[in-house]
Image 1: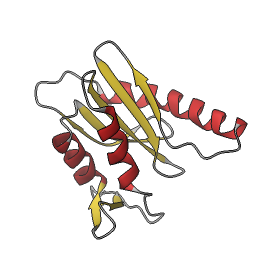
Image 2 (image 1 turned 30 degrees about the horizontal axis):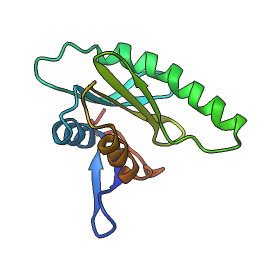
Image 3 (image 1 turned 90 degrees about the vertical axis):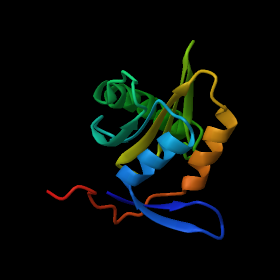
Image 4 (image 1 turned 120 degrees about the horizontal axis):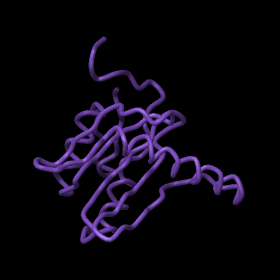
Length: 136
């Protein structure tokens, strides 16, 4: 899929979801970066070498967090931005990208959460003309 991401006010990037998750995974030392559908399917994923993460399982479970985020947003009459779940050894950040997709970041528990949140905020909104990065 094609994604339009905002790096800074001066720089605008036009990248595929595949390029986006690979860049996020590499630049932020993530264990995994995924773009998932609201049905829980993996659109694109990048995982760190040697990491035993099941991207499909994370995608399926992250959707539950996304549904919770949307329900709470309705209660507050507000648009959800992101949900952060902290575990003993991991952080998981889930952020809606558009109506059909979400970004899921999995980081070590020692990761700089503020830096991850800033990265997600800088991504901006995906264009409604998103197309698959892998041709059918």
